Image 1 (cartoon, rainbow, N blue to C red):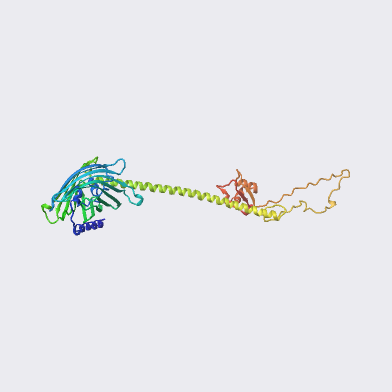
Image 2: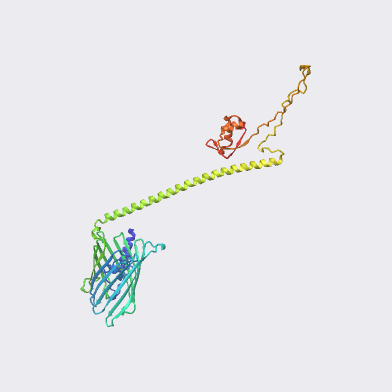
Length: 482
């Protein structure tokens, strides 16, 4: 920032020292003591009621109604120039950000001529944030009636326009462009095109530079304004208008007795103090509804406190945003964990379904290849039916058997066939129902509830919290293969 300040100061020093001054005529003199004190480098500022004469866009968005009057006297080698001005402006409530106004000025120069004009003013703001312009763009226009009385020429009355625009792209910079005196031939060179730039340094110093061009005149006007005592006092300086080839230095002072504002400006000859080169202008402005000046006495402390409150509010907003981001991240984490758990459960179900389908496929293949249905998981052949009397001898010695009684004839007994049970086959399958426990299943299939660990070790993914999951199919292994 310090380097930028030095570069700007150097640029203004060069502008003051090397820019040649060209002759200005009475038509180039504009009203306003503040603008005169800055050497008419006012095209990118124009924020008071006299701004409508320099750049009609400057009054856009003005918060208060203003009324002002001014008078100036500028001696020259040709003749004394005098000007009286009365202007008024106020916000336009129908269109927020807009300002309307009117002004009258009467300018005369002895032995040269004079000009009187009445103008009406309108300015407004345009929001162009979508084009990356942070602040609203100001535009404005004047419609005026001018009466020019050149020397040795007849009076001319003409209608004319003034157009202007101002833009603030950031970095405390303001750019302005205006075209004034767009009218028919009035006997003096018109129109005038002004390109302006202004830079505000640390809220206290205003640098301004205007390039003004018209037929027969191209001039560069640098100016500066510095605030003191919490903007209660303003000191100004600039290159004055070279009226009739007289180079001048402009100085000015502004006093803030809000809602009353007093401005005083003087132009001094660049080559020494002479009566013919010293000019003076005084203007007074009243802003209706403006806060009183004594409210500024707390000064920098109040401004610093306000800035700190703004910083605290920004930090609180950032903390709130970070907490919102954290809560959103926690919610996303919980949601993702639920999705992961659901997908894991779905994976287990699919694995179980795959095993069930594989078992059904093997069972169907077994049934297809064998006459009797069986369990394809059994690797041992079917147990053969055993005769319970196979171990008895085929014949019995008759001498060892007592002879039957002659009187009794033995009744032949009916031989009842025993039902031969097949040997149990493992592993088996069991569909879990409500109320099933590992101990019950071990008692059912093994006859010993203490063997429940064999079932548990064979089905780790179908058992939750020590209980089989209802609806799942458990594999019942051989108890000796735990």
